[in-house]
Image (cartoon, rainbow, N blue to C red; front, side, top):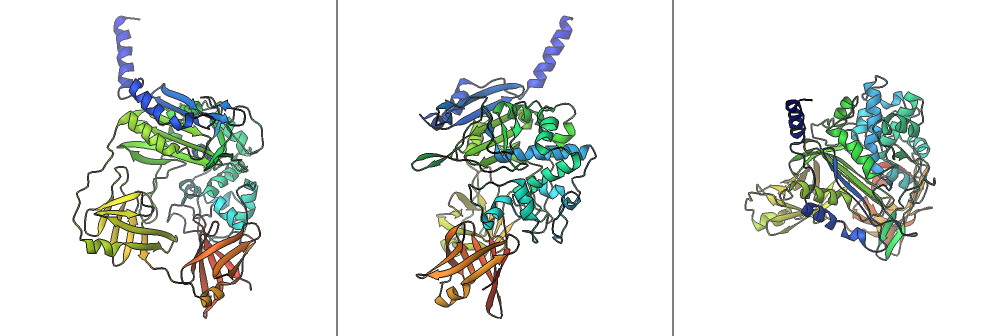
Length: 542
């Protein structure tokens, strides 16, 4: 080999590494370490963290215990349940079948899934991938039907329950609403098209070809598999075991390591040969039917962070938490897996990205003065009548706080306020007593100002009765006792209810909101909602 040729090779390698940091500085490593100090406390669960830049793993450490009972530490090779991070792998399997001509993502799902009710709208595979199908979501639906957190739930349970559903949350394509049901239905489709059990198909056709040798899908929650962490929930008195009684697949329950996750994430900037089209298609974004943006692609969120394109997703199941983020243009990936509920991996991933790239902590906003009287006219409670979302608006000086008090907005016009977070472009606009919230992604939400209306004995008496839903074969009884309203369910027990206004009650989970319907002044039923289930009809039977 000539010296000239050797120099040319070195030059090509250098060019290929431009913009990719070869390793972290000692200061950067120390700053990342400091983010996980609480994970290193004695007899405390923790997790594993890994960062890759280009081909090089520049940070890989584990903290805390995989088993508090036996004082087994987490390692960089410990497997964790990554929960909804699993969704992108189900999406990837569907995309591969699409590219092979074995299905189309624009096929309607009734082509593959038998027994569904005629919802009056076509639902496509694409809708399910984008969380725009309108299908009612697994856990919220099961909870209304009487399932508790420690009840086993499987894909078979979902298939049986969804077959009874006759309504959707919304018209497909018109909204984004996160829905585990859609990703579990991908399992039905993959198994019907391939004739192979989902668990086996994923291992043979996705994990092994992508070099993920320590990754598997778990469809039996009580199986014993070596090198898996145990999950824990943090309480005010310490930690308790958080056993995952959930044997469903497609939307979650993939177990893996940070090393395997980095191997996979590298495909977003240095793709395994033969997978180029698939990973490009994974990042497909489609607007909602009203033209609003939706940053949920196919199993991943595609957004910007610190002025850089990011592909990512989080996950939560039992006490496990996980988060992955890849910055394709910077050839940088971050993988965090944890085994306790208060670990906050999404926030820590953002902090790691700031260590790597830097970035502003505040947004420069040109504030327009708004009179105190005008500000106070905006203050109060607001309700979105479609989703039953309630938000309070309060002010401190020229800063508007929306919701839980963590979202701060400043006026750029007398009626328009912009979020102060440099990574949040949402706005709030006031018009004739209404508040329009425009998120960065998703359909605008229109809130109306409202005041609570007191519960009278006459109203309380009209609400009392027994209500039955044929879609989930479930009954709730509402009664009035010692000047308080309650709903009762045989498995959930007594659930307190409060009136927000006439014919709209708010309850503890799983009820959340109850909107009564009247005919000729008499209540004949109630629509019950709890976030990912909207307006499930219960007829009044007595």
